[in-house]
Length: 57
Image 1 (cartoon, rainbow, N blue to C red):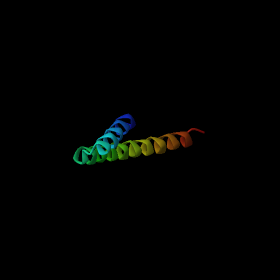
Image 2 (image 1 turned 90 degrees about the vertical axis):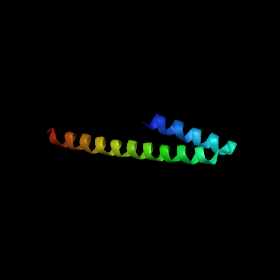
Image 3 (image 1 turned 30 degrees about the vertical axis):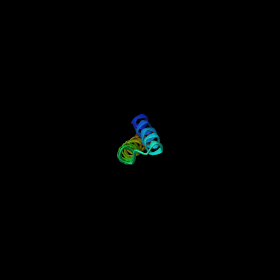
Image 4 (image 1 turned 135 degrees about the vertical axis):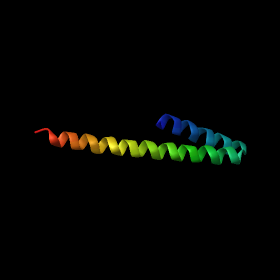
């Protein structure tokens, strides 16, 4: 998922540099959403891993 966020970020930067502001804005929004989802999934897995590690004595 982070790979797709990075791809959309690069597309946004290139489109912005070429003057395509609409495409740049749209791909930036998609990249932000994908990064947010990846961050939430990472935090959920981190909490689950920490909880599973504490239950083992």
